[in-house]
View 1: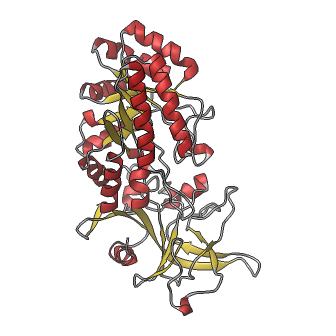
View 2: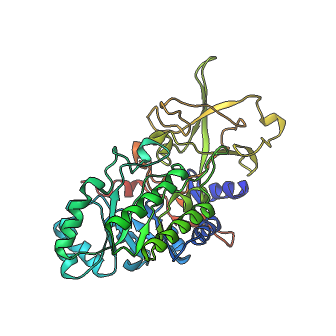
View 3: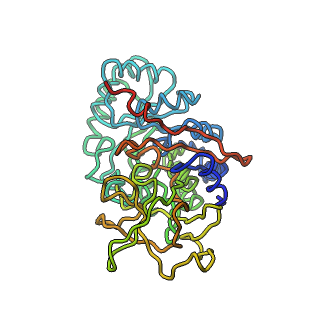
Length: 431
């Protein structure tokens, strides 16, 4: 995205703000839909990455289904006009009473329910059996891969899905009830090693062959690696698809069963299509032997990923006139008087929290970044911020209001897709 667009968005709507590139989102959806496959492919968008109604409508219009992680996410998808039949619910929730009745109505409407625990299976079992509704099942493989321990969803330190050691219990219960599992699902983590993703394909197909004779669809999960930083490499969709295609074809040759493939990316759709535009509000230094700090008007309350994961995001310094001064991807392009040789700074936010920084090392210490030295009022733009930023950040910490979301549309407009929260909205439910 051009720096002038970022500066214009800031001029029109203030800072901080989230800024998304509609064409980039569409292009990412089309890349995923073109992934090689043997007997058909479902692509579902993991809406937890970014649940904005306009985003949901955009990805749905491209032909993606929805992967929901809570009943409220299902409700939000429905508010965006997405039918239940295009949604799968994979959740840690085990609803009872009114919520269970609501879940049953969703399933009657076409929602695919992916059971992730023995308790969930028991809760829904009689209903599924009586109404002859096929279920999906997520099993826990015991191994996983993610960019950090907290993004590994497959090893023994995470509790997602029915562990292999409990699989016989689940299958016995289902057999006694007459319940059919026609979709088998595993998700091993976010941003992990593509080699681990390939191994998961092999192991999941073995599990399907051994335990699930009625399965028609195999879901390999999401977590496709996205290269936010220059030294990172994104997952190769073509290569992963070819690998999966070959293995599914081999499965058919062995079993005479044609499996449809399913994936559920979130990061891959949104991460590189989004930015956070912040303004440099202050500059500080901790003494001659200390560090330079750029105090931005948006920090952990707009992007908590560095604090949670020591996640790295590219930084762009943009002048108030919309000129790119420096980028992690390019040589500095500012006039000589705007460059300080060897300038490094730590971008921090305005929250009363030592970890409020957009650059932290794995131990949580501030990590200086090389960049052009901005003036007060210039912009520091945080890249790779389309996924798991607006949807996951502690937006109201220190009573800061939720930042607006702006969509840079295919026709070159700047469209508000979520207005800036007001203080009245922040306090509306207090009594």
